[in-house]
Image 1 (cartoon, rainbow, N blue to C red):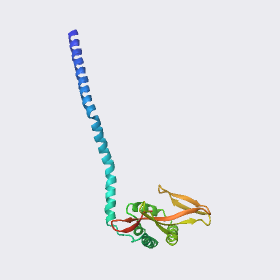
Image 2: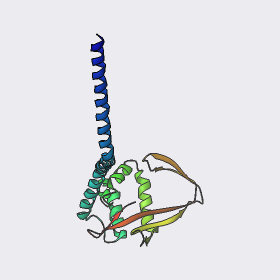
Image 3: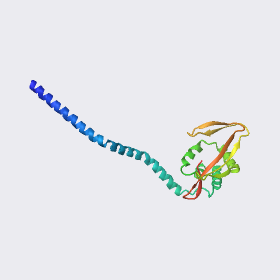
Image 4: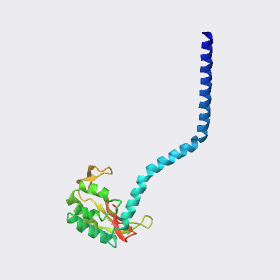
Length: 192
């Protein structure tokens, strides 16, 4: 009986030694390739994260190449946009925005007070002065408004929610629209 127990212990000890040795060998092998493995894993993860962004950028560039809606000057684009907007053709007016901004503008317009927007656009067109920025390539048409009375209105915040806005008498606000040239089709597009 003791002989059998000794043999069992001996075999178990041998199995443990073999198991530990194999584990050490595998560990050393893996450790040597671990950095390469992790680098490859991180690259695959980065590629999977960036692919949708790159695809969206490619879609935007492709759409810009065939986007002829707009004027030869920012002022002409503004005039065309206002005429379309006033005719209540919201989808048509959104086409005057650069393609990268159209979806955001579509969501914004759903929450817009139409009458306030028409007055605001008329004021930009009548009172606005144009200015080109050589550093950004943007052209803005705008003016500084000094509130004659207290005004309570609403605005749309960055997250898209409608929030109350109070403009105090005497305070100044810059009212403007910003344009960029589509260099594929040579028309000016609204970006803000």
